[in-house]
Amino acid sequence: MTRPEQDDVTVTACPDGPLLVRGPARLVDGDGQEIERNRATVALCRCGGTAIPPWCDGTHKVNGYRSGDPA
Ligand code: FES
View 1: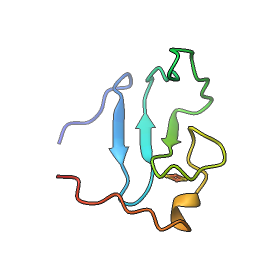
View 2: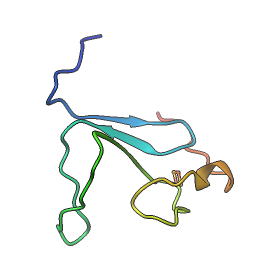
View 3: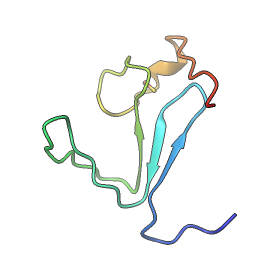
């Protein structure tokens, strides 16, 4: 495994949880508008249950979200 460079972007699918985005990725909404981020690492909801989209608020832990087999 190689070490990530400072400008590398990594997206990690957390089992039964959010997508963690590390690095200087540009996030935009469906209209192409910039989504401001104030952290180097952000968690994007993929369960659909968050109250603060697009961010994960931990709701996946109580709504029974299962990410399934990554294959
Ligand atoms: S993945 Fe965490 S609230 Fe949806």
